[in-house]
Image 1 (cartoon, helix red, strand yellow):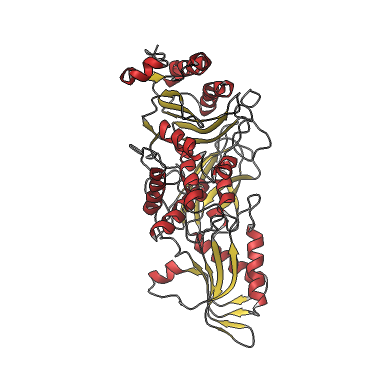
Image 2: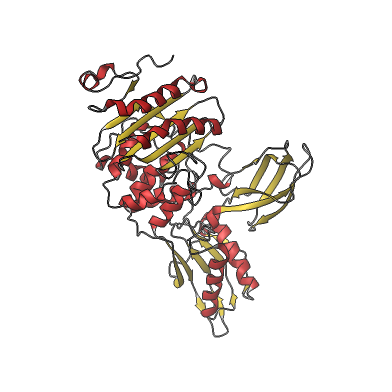
Length: 504
């Protein structure tokens, strides 16, 4: 038995906290209703697959502030994507649910009587992470935004451009990635870096075909096309029953990417998603192709402000606006950030907070803004380590108590409903989030809203449970270095959370 102290309940526990190690259930005067919670914690802790693990758990009644359950709640652990709740909740308050990002289509120079633009066309980014995305309810899908831009150019009477299409990403600094992200992640779509001009979520699809196990997989095409990309394909067909085990290795602003690993055998059109190395160039290139297809000629190749500055050229400061494109409101962006765990959205939100609060959209300023917000809410941040806004860095660290205290505190916030609705709903087939199968068919289905998190050797959940008496409890469970599969760990965490919905 790993748990030597099964429980210290009620008055004795409150008077002698020094003896609460490592587990306490505090709930006088009705301790019996918490027995199922205690039993679930005991089973979880004694599970053989957790013998090498470190884990923390904390449950708190939102209305009364009563601590229902705690185990290692003071231990800092890797939160994975549950860190997104820390970022998104803060952003709704710091920026406001109606905050939007603006992208400008601009030009410099003059347009003569023949429709010749003697100057350049600019896509001036405002950090919008949703620009040219195809997600539901987002207003500027890839094809649509290009059509809008081409139409704006045509409406101005421009038929020929004697300059360049220029992507301007100067809204944010050029350091696209947090320094603590790992090499295996950053070339792939979920590790795409943040640009001042994000485009199509800074990702593209690689279409592969494969044959027998062990044979080379063929790269058929890219959708959409990415400029100057040099792909070195080392992908092979894996064993039957395997999934996507192919990873891209490359860095921002570097066009050379290696693709290594395996995909399932005998596939005719298998998709692997990559991260565009320079999103601003990706946007400029896409617009230039769309303009050419519309019969508008352009004399030079697309370029970015960053590239021009490296060559010693200073872009024109006087520009004229053709079209402004607004992002959806932040509340909608937060919705998709949490429902689909979109790292790019979280990282952009973090930088936007840093820019608004401290004048420059650096990662460091974003982290500073997040910490300042939660400190203002009275949260003890001792031991909290944040390196990004999404949780992709394995160097992030937070306690279960900090997460649950943040959520419990936020229930009184004016933005709570928008935040609450953004959390995936467990066990509901019609939900947009990733928890459709989690707790499906149990008494907790539809009664738990939570953000899940996963990176290698880490599984985490944090959110709210609706009890039998229709009260909300905030919870967080963080598990690091377990020895079972992720699916098995999900099942174990389900059993840990199930008793919460039975509380009176």
